[in-house]
Length: 127
Image 1: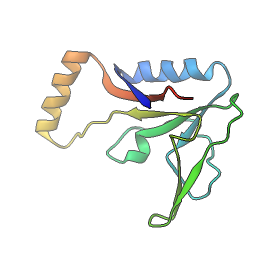
Image 2: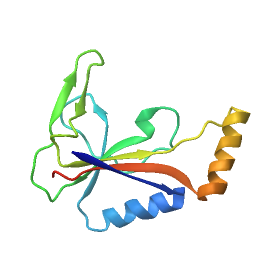
Image 3: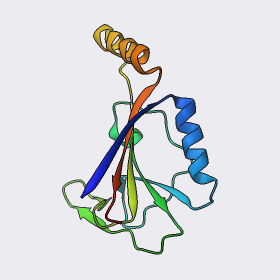
Image 4: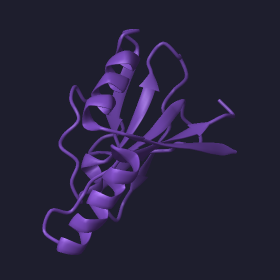
């Protein structure tokens, strides 16, 4: 059964976290969708926005020689990674809306409480 680890980090902390993971030379960051079943690694994460494509990614240790299992989604004409059957870790980043005063107040409150940006990683302990 997958487990979730929820934590808060600033943009700088996120960059340091990913740099640490990359230091082994084996970290691959994959997007959640691809036009083909071959998911190309992403070199840099985009700025997080409302679009889930900028916030949800898969982290893969390329030293693990197990295959990444993909599924075709005909309604969307793209492939997705099956996180339950693949040796990957799901990585979600936070984002904020800049156009709503209510959302800005919530974001300020969150920053005051956590001094950072929310994010979480889903870890599958069965791998």
